Amino acid sequence: MPDFDPSPLFALSLFPYLVFLYHLGKKRLLPALSRRGFQLTLLFVAVTIVAAVIAELRFGAELVAIDPLHGGAEAFLTLSNAVIVAGLVKPQKVQ
Image (cartoon, rainbow, N blue to C red; front, side, top):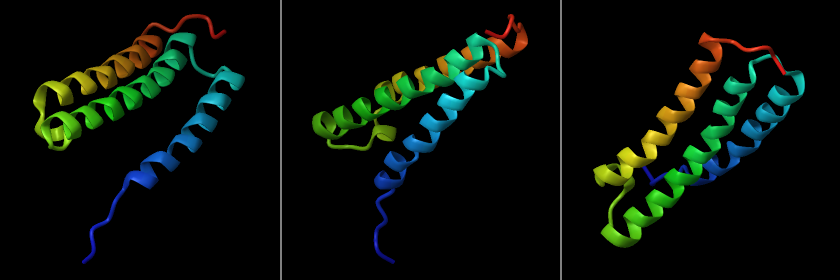
């Protein structure tokens, strides 16, 4: 079976997520803090891409093999998830 490179699918998934964020902001169905958490997920994606490039160029390995870089990138996912939950647990006035 030939090798499959999922990178194009990863890049294409950005467009539906941006549409999701647009409608999330327009409809204002969630508290502002939760909406900010969903926006922070884009920061996680950006940090993960940079960390993956550093892992490949500096260490010649995939990101999952370099624990400090992988853990650092995953910390941004944890941050975005925590912000989403914080907005849902203690909802403010929807703005």
